[in-house]
Amino acid sequence: MQNKKWFQTVIVSWGHFWSDLYANMLPPLLPFICGMWELSNTKVALIVSIQSVIANFLQPFLGFIIDKDPQKWSLNFAILLTAVPMCFIYLAENYIIFILMVALAAIGSAIFHPLGATKAVENASLEDRALKMSLFSSLGNLGFAISPALTAYLVSVWGLKALTLMVIPGIIFIVFVLINKAKNSSEHTGYTTTLQTEEKFKFDNYRPLLVLSSIVALRSWLIAAISVFVPLWLVSQGASEQAGGLNLTYFLLAGTLGGFVMGYIYPRTGGRKLLLATFSVSLLLLPIYLYSSHVLRVWILCLLGFFLAGTIPVTIVIGQELLPTRAGLASGMTMGLAYGLGGLGISFTGIAADTWGIPKALLITSLSLVVAIVLTIILASIRDDIARSRKEMYREV
Image (cartoon, rainbow, N blue to C red):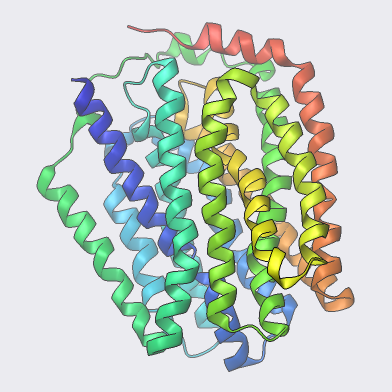
């Protein structure tokens, strides 16, 4: 029985890998699109903001609905809805159609994340929930990290039409899932979601979640800014588009590794201490990266990804602990709404980049971590809320 529970988690986590791989095809394509249509940094940032807002702001709403009956929703459909527009986006004839295809793919991503987060932790004990969410998050981050280099390589060697090839492995994965018919989600879960349980959700339980979501939004703003503008900055300095995508992959892969390490450290140190430490280190690393030599730059970028993006699973687990019987809603807040708010900030970074240049724009954006540190201290002051939530909300049948 335990193997079946983990089999579902593994399958859903690999689905997260493919969903995020397709969703993150956009950043490495931007240098090619800029060359075709001569887009300003502001217009480039607008594309990313639209994708981020749609993919993320829908998640809390969808998560609330999915929590009522997750079995009515299809992860396979969500993956396809993201994969097909992104793999055929080269067919867009102008800027507007390009944005519409990006938006359609974003809807698929918005469906997948709260649904996947719900199915990944079904039947999980408190201890297993953290491990399963770390696996779910880390495989998604891995797909997110691999995507830029793979996309940039295919397009650099064979042109934009090569994007069509990327839809094939996603379809193979879906066929595999359908053949195996992993239906662990149809079994009885280990936790109740009764009206009596739902009535326990008071504002005090949501207050730390709102603070946590604000922290995630600020961190997401900086991660998104680095993901979008570092490749563009490197290309402007003479690097190839492929090199820009490869550097972004290094940054994100380091974040995936950081996620595993932070997931191991989290139960031993607590989330707030971990966030304070990693945010502080990230604040120091970014200016060092921007003004270091080319030899050291890639290593510093990896360290920045390790500490900054590595905290993603930690914040998801904290959110799950706050609302453990509402996995979809909690994930929609910490993975969706917060990321959408961070995506909105990209437009301001783009305006700053057009005005003062990309390095100064990234430094200005990094000040968001100062606010995140203050909010993390505030989150520590409501530690009793988190402990009470964990004690009252989890109840095995």
